[in-house]
Amino acid sequence: MNTINDSIARQKHQSSEDYLKVLIVDDEPMVHDITELILKNFKYKNHKLKLVNAYSAAEAREILAAESPFALILLDVIMETDDAGLTLARYIREELKDPLVRIILRTGQPGMVPQRQVMREYEIDDYKEKSELTSEKFDSAVTAAIRTYLGFQSLEQSRRGLACILDAVRDVEATDVEETIANRILDQIESVTDRNDKKTNSMGALLVSVDEKQSSRIITGRGNYGNIHDSALDTIEDASIKDLIQQGLSSGGTLSDEHHILTSLLTRNGERYLAYFEDEKEFGDVERYLVELYSSHMKASLDNKMLNQELIDTQIEIISTLSEVIESRSGETGLHVRRVGELCYMMADNLGFDEEKLDLIMFASPLHDIGKVGISDAILNKPGRLTPEEFELMKAHAQIGYDILKTSHKSLLKLGADICLQHHERWDGKGYPNGLAKDEICIEAQICAVADVLDAVKSKRVYKDAMPLDQALGIIKEGRGTQFNPEIVDILIDNKATVEEIYNQLDDE
Image (cartoon, rainbow, N blue to C red; front, side, top):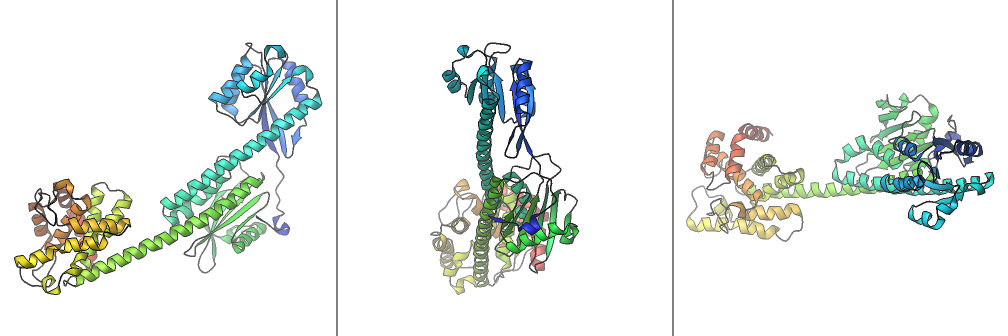
């Protein structure tokens, strides 16, 4: 992990010591006095102790409910009952489900509480007789307990941080990329560092963007910078902070020292972001490592998201172009397939399709007539009514389209294959090519059948003139319950205003 240059990193932060809470549970006031005297100047690395006193197990429960977490509990066994301390220990492990707090059992009557049994059954971390606890031994026991607690705390922080990273990656995969970056990145990093729920006035955060011209701009700020939004970088008055941000932007990676973390995110389409965090309370090695891990995973996820979106966009563009080319053979512009897609989207939306399925039907339905590639121009462009023999040849386009698309494993093309095959089936079972009826026909093909016929009767063809929308909707209504699913017909009729908007918008293009 890169560190910030010493010349830049010397900020005017006071070194803040971290306090770990220790709960003393004993019914003898003298024990509390002696314990406080011994631990008065205790310090392990940068950690001091904050001592909290409880004179019964019942009082300890109230304190634990209100003031957790504690790093260490110094616990007497015999208080209001002979097993009050042991019952409290079980309550901590099993009901509060706190595996991190270290529990040192202190007893003046060792014969009443067998050490081996207590250590195993009550998940006690250490067992001491009060008579053997000299100042030096007691300090050693507390030091060992605090060291173990910090180790477990670090592991738990790593576990939570990794979980947050996985959540962030899933978030990118499930959400619009721009929204994820602009509105969520600070929340995600605060979660990774486990500081998003800390009540502190010393923490500040900024999200900076860089455009194609390498111009920097602050998108939003938190904490000490909570009043800064959509502002130039010069809004920051502290020159050293601006230097740090510029260095982070130049680096393109993750930089950190005890009080600062800066991490960059670059996306495939050239967008760049820098997240800047500062805090008087030091960032630990685990926090800095997790932020760097977060950054590397997010870069990969964003790249994958962008690449996948490029593939989807390319696929949709190819499908749209191919559909328009097929339609142009019969003298129709590409607006037919676009109108069918929009109409299908509207009806599917009213049927309660989720966003993914809405996109699928919108982009798959234009493929409904792709099988016309196998039909001769003489039949496609015949100005008069088709003969029975010609109509049988025309009907083959449903199977041809299905055969073209059926081997694909892509969901968009698989749905396109089903729509090709079934969009001329009828609700009453008298359609083609397989005489399917009602729910034997896939719902997407049922929807496309209504959209296709509406646009066909409303639009001008080589064999007919255009028809007003009201008249076209009347023809669809006549097919309710025979040719078409009644529910879908009702949705189309009830949303006449939206249908008019679709035609007005596309006809104006």
